[in-house]
Length: 391
Ligand SMILES: [Zn+2]
Image (tube, rainbow, N blue to C red; front, side):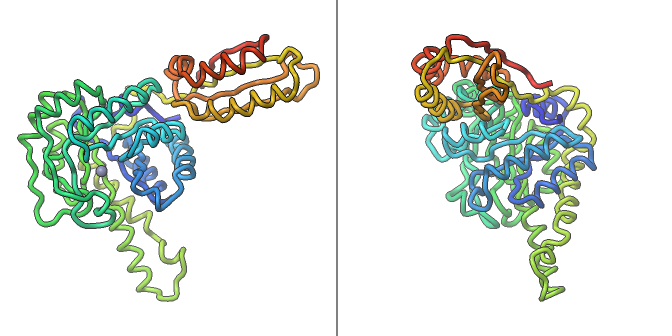
């Protein structure tokens, strides 16, 4: 099951001087191209789902496909929420299976960014999920979705970066040193001195957004100065778009499958090129050895209701299914009744946590405490409760 802890993955890249691609996907073609390129190049990879793209696909369906792809992959994979816009977005993404989240509060002032980020870090860490923050602002210039990053570029300040890390406890930091979202206009000028200083002060994996259009030499210098995760989307979207246009011109009567024919191959080629330049090609086995396998925990309760009336039991179960599933770190809540009559225990809760850490945060969560004290325990006097880690 090569779904792995993204913190271990990026720390390995940081310590070994290479960078891992975080490729935003907007369709199954992207997902399949990313995974197959990573497998062909033996590279660790990050499947990235950007909240600004949710208008193009259903997040829940894309997460289900991403998780299946990750679990059956032969290379280490992490699934990351890119540009999460709110606390609620981060909880939702974690509960759907993202094992890394990015907080994008970079349009707020420093104090505003810190307070939004702090709250998300506290919640995510209690679920075992690492967090990427952003300080400074990577604007969009042109290209697909560039308009979703309006305004001017604000460079990351070295002093503020240090204070931000201390106050928020983020695991990775996206920095703004001259890249832009979308396509670069002209020759991009990057502030490597600034990056070097940030890296010397922070000593955590740094992230570059807006990787499209940089030269191999620029990528190498970024990586030499602490960049361990590179977000990459526009070049893939442009590559796929170019192939679709040429398909449409070559056969003006072609339908959907004729138009998209070959786009996976075209994207795969570009992804493979990046993995070689960034040095992640060939690192899959080393990362699998170094990284914690990302494993869910099943919180299992079997219980009897001690002759309480059916309506009271049904009300308890209905409320439990609703409120417990919204607690951070809860993947799914299943309630069941014994198939065999006369079973020793008549009822069950099967509650899946995203990670072992959720055992503690769930137990102390006020929504859970209220449900357990007010509705569950008075009904279910006779019960057994055990947590199982997936093996
Ligand atoms: Zn970005």
